[in-house]
Amino acid sequence: MTTKKQVVEEFRCRAIRDAALRVVGRKGLEKATVDDIAREAGVAKGTLYLYFRSRDEIIEKTIGAAVDDLLARLKRAADGPGPGPFAEALERVLAAQFAYFDENRDFFRLYFASGEYSEDRRLRQSRRYRLHIDQLVGLIESGRRRGELKSLDSERAAIAIAGAARDLILRRIHEKEPPPPESDARFLSEVLCSGLAARRVEG
Image 1: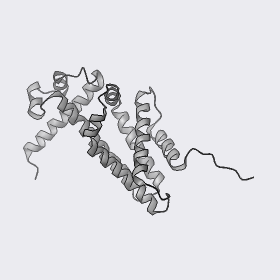
Image 2 (image 1 turned 60 degrees about the vertical axis):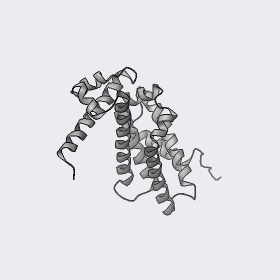
Image 3 (image 1 turned 30 degrees about the vertical axis):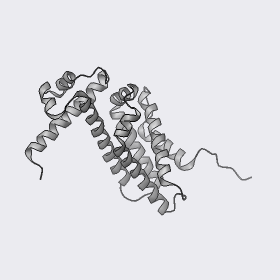
Image 4 (image 1 turned 90 degrees about the horizontal axis):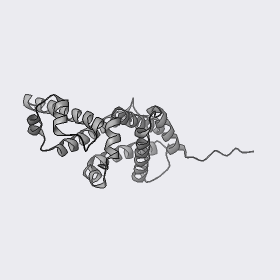
């Protein structure tokens, strides 16, 4: 059973993480300080140290919480209204993913540009990456069982989808006016599901 103290702690930690998102989005990772984050969160600097050991831990936990929120959103999108065609489910997942990065665009643009998105950090987030790949594998396996997809290596296909989506996200967060999330989701889903080859017309 969750205690009142735990509820208060989680509320304050979330408020601090949300403040860190906004501060980093405005100032960048290098210039964001504990003082800035405390001011944004409306708490004393000392209060932050009750919940986090350092500025770096605040950033690390903020990234982790953001990815957890994203994974929960992707799961809801994948589940959708119920079983349906693979292409539709994939499009929903991609649209949810693109929309999430759009909503936190300033933060992620500066996060990627700062060089903080390193191999070392990616490995530290590997559990969450694994969960994302597993979500995609589940979608692919369902499509294959229904006869919509050919027999293929679901793991490698999931990694390919995740990589294509990541690269399109990087493009979107640097565009002044990216297309609507649904538009890019439809585009990528069609490329992944149908390929780039034009259909031959029998004459």
